Length: 95
Image (tube, rainbow, N blue to C red; front, side, top):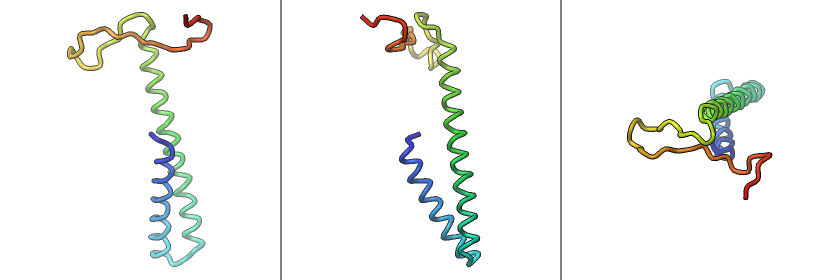
């Protein structure tokens, strides 16, 4: 997820939501607070989605032990063994 694209999309969705809410209710105050609630829900959803992606990546990295072959991503298509490479590993020399 590319954050600036998400924010622009969120602003666009909130704009459409606000316009439709104003047309339906005719009240600027109702439109304002409902749009604010919608913005909080969208932001919470984005935050949860990022947490899920980070947790999934972390779980996948923990499955791999550095220096040992990784499980093939596609079943049997890739015959080469892959290893996890962590650049600039703290406490190790990179020479």
